[in-house]
Length: 336
Image 1 (cartoon, rainbow, N blue to C red):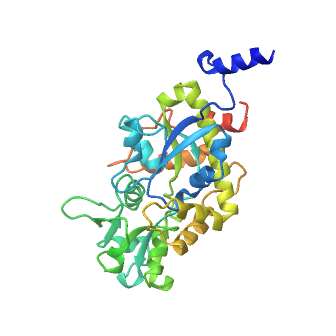
Image 2: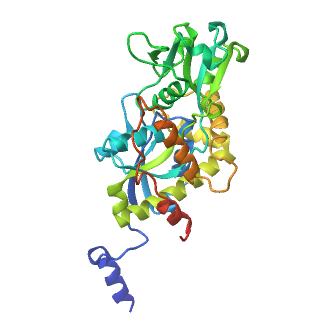
Image 3: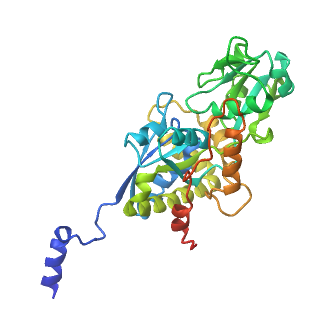
């Protein structure tokens, strides 16, 4: 009997039998930006073994200024990406079949931060001013907001002049712009760390301006979802990822250390990452129990804002198949 069992185990790989020593299923995750606390949950899930325990071997690829996640996955360079919904929906309308499978950030961290000495105290003061805006897919919330306000942003004599902002805060520090784009967990703190005082700044949170859109979510493609094995792996990935985020929010100092350990470039500042992690934790939940769940109402609000400008809408029609709850439901054993 022992001899027969040993023989079967030896032949297991050729017979297609699974074993405890089988290689984990591999997934590649493309981040939206460089390694930082914005992505702590993924690094924590990897470091704490949550992905491994789920039977997954996950490669985490940092992003950067020249990396567009939707282009990466379209070219086959990733199985799942982190992206903002405006960029994902715009890409889907252009032919990249992105599908939201989980919504990590439930609240928006995007802001427009202005120098008080520029004379900006309310949105009506934007007219005639230079406003710094990120592009590479991050411009859509801004353009939708300006459309809602009735301000033009292009042409020979636009109502507001758009400065294509680099991923830094120099235009505000050097008074090259009245306002710049910031995230409440990153660039706002860069301004403070550079010596500006909170009372020198006027901050407009997109969350409070009626134009908040869903930011960091997890996206895959129609083709990946059509593969039963890949869909099963993505369900395991979503569950392990949210476990990582729950752990990161509850153990922020440890999460920051894990992020710092993954900083291969050696450029991160621990104090800044600590501030970032604290702010990120506030975006993970909307007060409901289903962290990581895409609220259909929040999805529809994002779509409505993107279509609001009738002259130059970000997307021109109601998306179809742009999100699914099937992966989330499979992850948590939720039956329809």
